[in-house]
Structures are given as C-alpha cells and as structure tokens.
Length: 252
Image 1 (tube, rainbow, N blue to C red):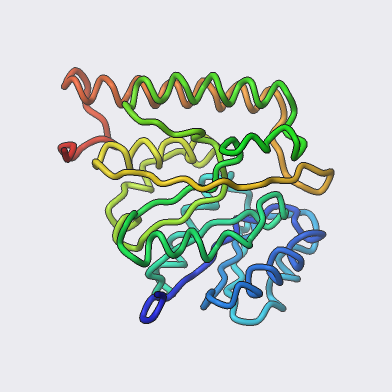
Image 2 (cartoon, rainbow, N blue to C red):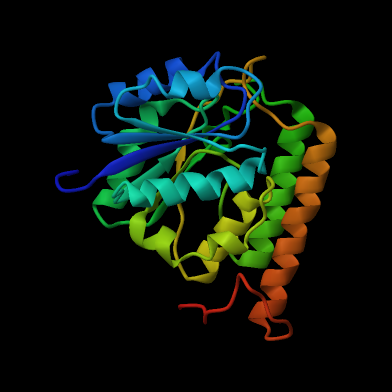
C-alpha cells in the first residue's frame, strides 16, 4: 500500500526531552516511517541535543521561540524538502499514540483523503484519558460552532495529531497563518475552503505531567482566535471581505 510513498513524521517540540525518545521509538516501531523531522522551538532543556542523536531524523532548532504555529511551518517545510509524499504530525510529548500512524497514512496513500485527523473525542475516550472537564466542554462547544460556520461535521478541530498529503500542504497558504496555537484551526479552515473532506479516526490520548497543554488563559485566547477565523471564512464566502487565507474559489 505504501510502495513508492515516502512517509515523514514531523514533531514540533518544546521542552520534550523527557518524552521525545519514547515517542520516536514508537514512531519507528510502526515500520513504515522513512524519516522524522524534529523542530525544537528554543527549548530550555536538552530536546535539541537528544533530537540530534536520533537515526533517520532531521533535527532543527529555532534560535528564538516562534510559537506552536511557527514551529509547524518549519516542520512542514523541512518535511517537503525531505521528499515527503505523506506528512504526519505527532507531538513528541507522547500524548498521542504513534500506533495510529499506519492507519492514518493508509487513508492518504490509497487516495481516499488528503487530510486525516486523530480525534480525541470520537469513541468517548477523552475524559478517560485525563482531559480536564473544562477543556472537554470548551472543545465540544467550540467544535459545534465551527461546524455550523464551515458546514462540516468534525468531532473536533483541536487535535494535534494530523496527516496530510504532499499535494495538500503545497496548496495551502501556510505562511499566512498565525505563529501561535490558532494555526491549527486556520489550516483546517483552509482545507475545508478548498473543498477537501477531512477524515477522522479515534485516537486515545494521555494527559500526564510531562505532556504539553496550554493553560486556561491561552485556551481562551485560542478560542477567540478560532471564532475570528470562522468569521473571516464566512465573510470571504459571502464576498464581503478579502482574506489572504481564503483567496481561491471554493471547490464544490
């Protein structure tokens, strides 16, 4: 199924020295990944030094912290430069299990989808995995609102476990997006704008002290950023405002 397809896993890393090796080992244990890209966003620990010891991996460090979105921009650029046909993002904090990589890659390799998300909410395992109740409620509420605006039926927009085809990444105006956490929402809005169907598979997650998670204030900022993107999308679809992200005609 993956013959001729180069699969690259990207890991946007920040202070992930305690979990990076474990995540990398499980990624490579899936036996389909050709290369790994680790981008360290000016960590205060030994993340970059550890990344440089990993076989079949590119380790890149930002001299100054660029933010989660800025980190992803570098990840995708380096993955495409490495010849990736399929790019899978998994966080190096081991919150998402790398065991789903073959399933996510297969949906892209067989031409069925160009984007696949690992959803924490499908299957009802988010709370069991330790997701805080306030975050679960906010996730569900924000997802409902975004589905109404985008005309989609996703179970969540906020997972950090994602797979993309090369063709899709090359078609997206990634540099126009935020360098902060709202990048995650903006890229999905752009994909929907282009008429792509986004697939989802159930993903168990683990919340523990070493796993990264934004605090309440940053979550509120992220939520307002998502709503602002949704307003931009809707106004552009009505032809009432110009947008650097939504510049091409929607496919139907």
